[in-house]
Length: 310
Image (tube, rainbow, N blue to C red):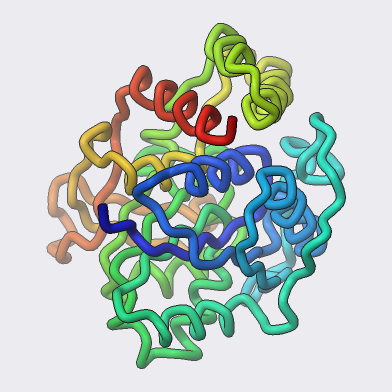
């Protein structure tokens, strides 16, 4: 079976860590590189977290550090969600691998330029690195198959009333990416809030018994405590793995091709992914917007993934 070659661009983050674990376990995905960005925590912490996860799952994948700050704004982090380290909760070993000396966008360019097949980009944090890459290497845009991202929301937000965190952190970068003409799949809050993980799902994952199963369960236990304490929910929405899960099994999702634009300077709507359901703005549909997911298949996919490491 031919694998989908990808570059993951992430800001680990509990759900980013699980997305890495899911991607590396799949026999349909070939992770060619991992780049990091400031988002859930600072760039030093998100890079360290990516390297810690790779050491834990014993994967040797090149990692490059990207932008700590958005294109024209101060970095806003999600310490209240992910803790001081960005991966509070489980114990993870310190990395033995180091990040490459080249930047994230240079690594992207190297991988894409050398590849005989088109590469899919999977950003699960702010889109700063992707935007810089597109601006710096416009001649390589044609070698990108698709961008499967976690970010945005067709309706509502989670960091403001109108904006999802990843897009809000760097809306200017998101604007560049969404206007790039590259095919985009958007796993926004519309679908990730339906990718619910309940305590009984976490218990089932932990019962699989391997060290990766236990790690994923502990990441989810931390995540569900936050959502219980802050939101009053009895579940945790698993955001970032949806961008990987769609690549593995798109039939598990319901989507609609729509026009999506980024608001970069609204008084109340900065960072909003303005989604046109009815064609009112007369613009071409540019994004496959994920709207629903088969939750039971999603949980089964996570369980299958953790068992690949046993």
